[in-house]
Length: 120
Image 1 (cartoon, helix red, strand yellow):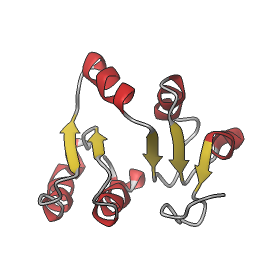
Image 2: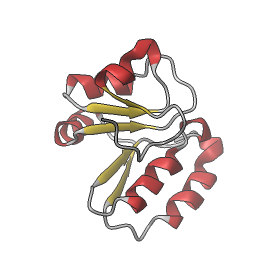
Image 3: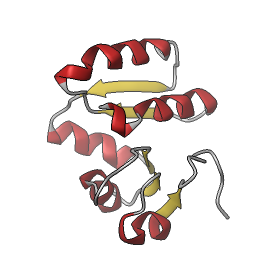
Image 4: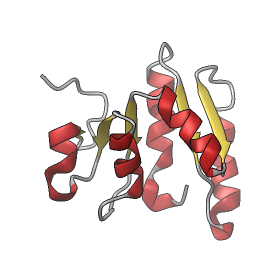
């Protein structure tokens, strides 16, 4: 949940799509904790948004089995472990990065930050 991950885009998507449930996992580095709290506070009233913070592997697996899409708005990533975990749980990928064409093959590459566009 550091700034390069652009987690606020995830929260904005929850705001834009109130009929869908959004679950955020992870926590910021110590130097970004206050900024993260400030941002999360803006979205505290969203009934469809759950922020779990850091959770153990067992809990993460439970969450992933219930999800159908991974939303990864990060501005730069290699091949994120989150993508591999999403694919292992048969989830589609919605991301601003497309390492080795993986996002395009298994979801939608939001290369222009058009996360809410429906691809045909």
